[in-house]
Length: 335
Image 1 (cartoon, rainbow, N blue to C red):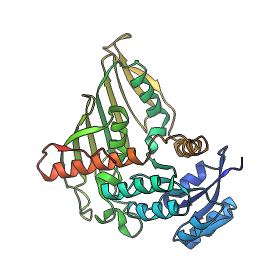
Image 2 (image 1 turned 90 degrees about the horizontal axis):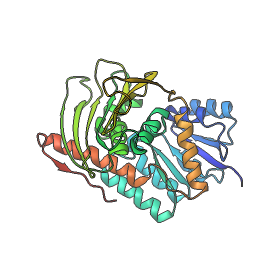
Image 3 (image 1 turned 180 degrees about the horizontal axis):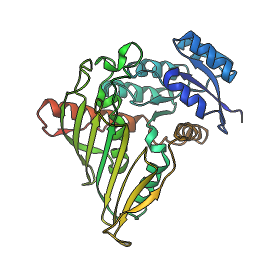
């Protein structure tokens, strides 16, 4: 079988995808699109691509392309995903899936209409440590999980994005655009979120027009409870943190430290064991390899359109809750 052709739109985030996806067994990079013509030309020469363009319609029309990887700003995901489906392509779309619940529904409906695969690139699920943590949470190592805590800590002062799009509330919301990392990670361990209570404030980045500090209390469908912290203006290093508490043990780690900690009842509940862990270096390649495997073998992606939509819906429930002074808000989980 011939390799599937991958076309990437959006080279600021997409360039990292190119770097990590050069040696996939069942797919190859064949096309690139970006509004920056110089960047397109540079990437085409570096990777010897048959298709390189500043016109997205040209990329999706190419017979070379089977998979479109949408790595553009949040507000472009809906239109580009729909166009790719209409052209008969499968779509891997960067997180967040889209800006709103309604946009997510349109994308889910289009994937069903055209019979194509849709996956949301929640890359944390392909970080080796988070994968190991998930295995331990569900193979009995930690016992019955009853509490999950995650955080997304990132200062956006110096990264407003091209033309300041990250600070434009019509194009991106902090809790959805960045906080979806932590929300999705919590959902991966806790399951569907039923209700949310949230509070937020705004002490940093004046040009950011929405609150940049959020705390979410989550009630999951299976009686697990959770907590998510999101900050986009804090004065501290970037990081994604995870804590999983179970009846037999507790696991604490993140995506940047060289080790994690675990405490197990059957070993010694009064001390932490240090766990060396792998880096996140190949997560993008693993993400794309998984999506290609789902296409080749007709599997449901780990984060399909419905799952990606549920993460966005959880964020919007939190936004509504904060506007109502922390009131409990139900999450839409039907898509």
